[in-house]
Length: 108
Length: 116
Image (cartoon, rainbow over all chains, first blue to last red; front, side):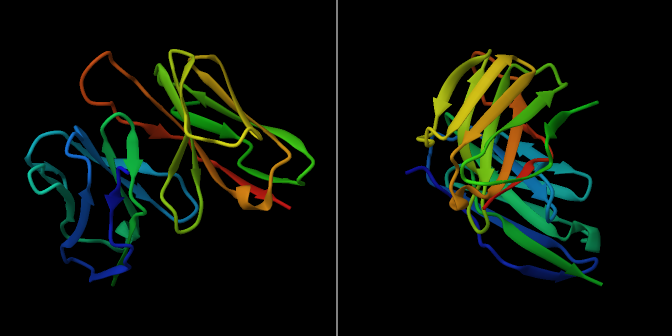
């Protein structure tokens, strides 16, 4: 069974702090990795995609991939209350498998 | 209209009704997907269409019937549903190549379905 595991949270961080979201996956053949953000009652929207080991930065967001350890993480710097949402990790081998998501709460 | 659109946004139906969900993508993509999202569960892939051909049916009950008349439109026909089918149904699209990693999927706003 190919799985993607995330801590459901909630992860609570103060405004301005770094939020660190983690995801592990079971299929070593996975090739592409995505982070989606989903606000309550809304559909998922893409935040980051990453394909190679290492870090990928986009504004306040940094995705980190370690294929040897089979984990992918998302760092959000200078967290804002508007970042409060559920963050879905998705991993692709032959199809896209989603985790259950981590709920992030950023408090003022 | 841009991106991926879905109609209706909300639907309440009885177990004996027949209804259809519609999805349209304006991104020029060649692959479309139906997902089911229930509370506390991960997104569940239901159907995949590549170049209008169904390439995946994830053991979905026959009371759900997909239709893809062209690469821009996708339907999900519903009949004799059960209360446990109540969920958010999401459509997505992507541009698939013949090799390499799967490309990013873009989601529509979803249809919130309640089966009474």
